[in-house]
Length: 498
Ligand SMILES: Cc1cc2nc3c(=O)[nH]c(=O)nc-3n(C[C@H](O)[C@H](O)[C@H](O)COP(=O)(O)O)c2cc1C
Image (cartoon, rainbow, N blue to C red; front, side, top):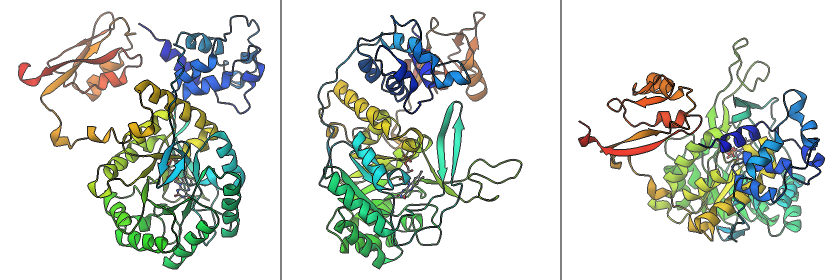
């Protein structure tokens, strides 16, 4: 029975992730309190333990960090002492040296982590800051030969409990800088950061514009081109995802781009389509060197039940916009797997994105076939600083798994996805209850009764008993248990059950 992990995560999740955190400044023992708590929140508990080193709160009597905790202004402060003491129970593990560098279409990247094309990489200062903090490269915000007229406000969010958003809607289009300004950003960035990778994301309105844009991007120092065939909220027809759902148009524009450059070209795909294969194959057959996916998913959110306007509310109206962030990750992974498993796309590099927040998210994309990954929404939410736990967490995972290079696990998960017909349907895997660990909340009973097969009964001691005859082994109870007291138990062949 050990609830330490749950308490550690719950208490850490109360942290507001302050900028220039007062707690760390106040700590007389030199504990990087904010970084440690952030690492726990970003699924890097071992990294947090490592950072703690041999420091502790034992000789601190004033609790200086808690007295300045921003959360304490409206609630109780984060219990730093508790977090530090729980962390010190974890093993102190130094990861082995591993190689995070990858190759994207012949361009060397120091690690797989890129900012994805959007506002997070939209001028010189922003990208320079991200590079200084450790991002390997940027897919700069899409540039074009026109400057869009954007609305205000332009974002909406799907909330869950304490998290400000788990899903995010935007109705932005492309860069609002002039073409000249954007090209000068590229030139300065390449001059000052020659080892970092600049992907120029472009959008033309016709063949001539695609060709002209790409040759200018090459001239001004970009390393790779990304064709935006996927923005779902462009004003005007025949742009963004209107192109991405039309394989003939995709091929035509890829050819126009290849005519204007010798640089590698990625085609960025839209998820607003049943299968990504027709446009992906069309782009590769037309000469694209790699694929990027996913762009945002068409969405409507947060209908105000007084005014009936949805979010973002632009003078009482909204428009269908692009959905991104943590909530879209499973959809993104499904498209990545589809492309990575397609014979016609064999050996075509994929730059994956859609909901990446932690090293674990990134590792899932890599295991499903991506050699690089890109991030926007979680940078908007938490800042460029997430790169620290992305790289440290990935290194630790690779070290634990005995992988020396990212290439050791690219695509390892594709083989584990089969057509539904091919799954073994002969057995039931029953849940196993840890009655010591169970706290008697009865959530398993509620979910099994109302959303399952009425296979759980609650005993007088409030602990569950399985009624095996009714159990189908769905594992809803295991997923729902708040303390991890239910695990996968025996697998019994269905023919032995009657
Ligand atoms: C505010 C915002 C602006 C974006 N602008 C662009 C863009 O200019 N070009 C583009 O190809 N994708 C754009 N995207 C899509 C992202 O690059 C990315 O494909 C998508 O958001 C999924 O990744 P995420 O969940 O990490 O945000 C934008 C996304 C957001 C949220």
